[in-house]
Length: 132
Image 1 (tube, rainbow, N blue to C red):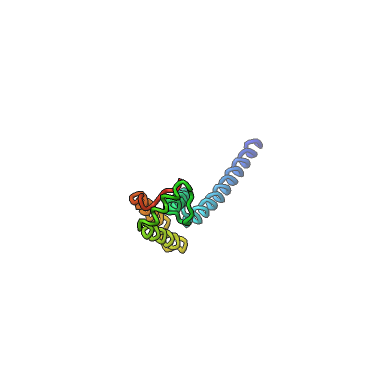
Image 2 (cartoon, helix red, strand yellow):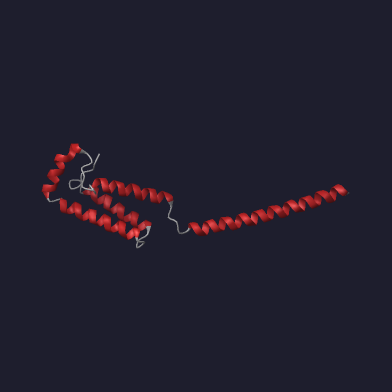
């Protein structure tokens, strides 16, 4: 009979400890979920970085030839009048980045605008030479 009470007390103690641990974990998980609501998704941030790098390379963002084999064709582009289009798109990218960095637009809207810029660059591929 003493063994029965021993196991009964031990069982009740284990159940109480499990319930306390479960409550503590639930509070921790809810805290993490509450804090992570304002954090943008990691994969979307990576995708945004890749889009920006693609646009910078396509629009020669820093005006330095990244591939010297295309430097002669770049001179032709400067003389064609497409330079104004390229500079306007570079300015648009800078403005868009500034708006995102200041919190004026969400990351979803930022990605959508970057997609539009990438599509525009691909449509006007004669004005923008992709660096390889």
